[in-house]
Amino acid sequence: MRHFFVINPHSFRTLKSWKQIMMDLENCFSVGRRTEYKIYTSRHPRDAIAAVDRYMLSVPPDETVRVYAVGGDGILFDCLNGMVDFPNAELTSVPYGNANDFVRAFGEDVKPAFRDIKELSAAPSFPVDIIKCGTNYAMNEANIGVIGQTMLFANAILRRATKQWVKRITPHIYTIAGLRAMMNKEVLHQNYTVTIDGEDISGSYGNMHFSNGPCNGGAMTPNPYAIPNDGQLNVIFIGGSNTLKLISTLPDYERGRFEKHKKYYSHKTCRTIEVQSELPLYVEIDGEAFLANEMKLELISGGIKFFAPEGIGFADYSHMAYSKG
Image 1 (cartoon, rainbow, N blue to C red):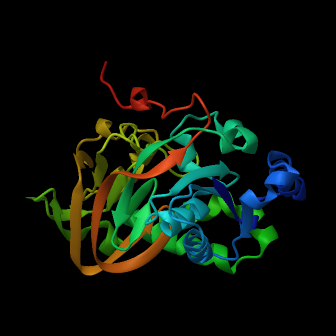
Image 2: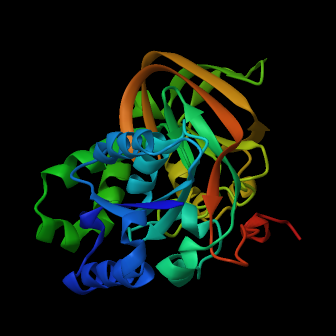
Image 3: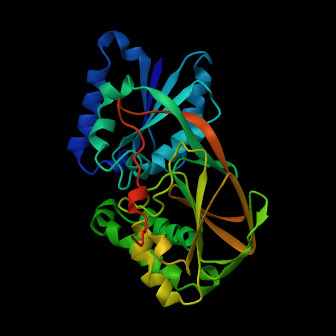
């Protein structure tokens, strides 16, 4: 077995935490086992996709490779897309990012366990669902609509900002970008041609949220029913003619209580969904945002093997859902 550590250096807020992860790697592998692991430092978004692919091609197909995404959901996205075509690859996340949404699917207090490199290196693996989104793959979620436009706005700001400036205002950037996107009536009321498992549910939607995991945004749990190994893609359709009232429902949506506002939210489960529109689609996939002409999303049941600390499984967030009782 080999171990490939892919590190996003921008996820580490202090030099101390960076030194700690390097020390953990050294301590995990004895001198005689140093050839079993390799470290790659990602330079920019999507850089690690090719790096993981190259490393997998260099390893015999009958030898297991454990790929560690060290950072946040962005580097996890890169690692997934680099290893997804290799049946001898297993994936995990070592959470040091701002959100770590996929790790949160295991519970809100599991970060320390996922940062224990020695324990993680010997942890069991199991099949996990993934979402195929056009030519990309997602671990946690995807959006088409206002949230996609929000991420485009936010990412544009973040990539132009200096590191110190980002640290000071990062929590506010997404709020500002979201408010700007909500004011775009063309996207907020965009008409879509939508087919979900063969059923036509075309209409006007502000956003379509496709969930493999329940968590999003570092603190939100918009879809408490989603479990990453249940073989279902959870979809929340958001829309309504009254923009101000829709905005007022967002705090409930962020807490998984969207069913409280059935006028603005509807929920379905499926395996495949196809989306088209006369206007460009604003798409977000695990933090990556882009424009597309059309999009097909498909849940790949057990699409990869994921390894997690012994005794830790996916948490049940369904108790957070809205109940009149």
